[in-house]
Image (cartoon, rainbow, N blue to C red; front, side):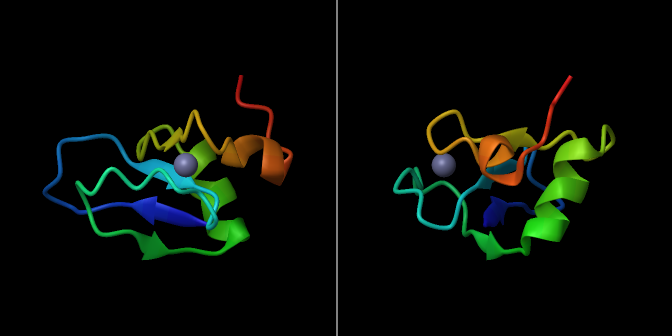
Amino acid sequence: METKLRPDDALPVIVHVGTCSIRQGRRIPAEISAHQARIVLADRVVAAEPCPICRPEIKLGINLE
Ligand SMILES: [Zn+2]
């Protein structure tokens, strides 16, 4: 898994599966664990978004309602 996250970045945090090829080149990805990915995807303050291409929430079995 990876996320693209910087404290001063106004763009939403995007969580990817580690093998995702959609990097967009806009930010340097940071490696996170599957456990961390679950936390950030569930955290409404962080408001992380799953990548629409690699769908990490499906890989993690998360129901994002
Ligand atoms: Zn992705």
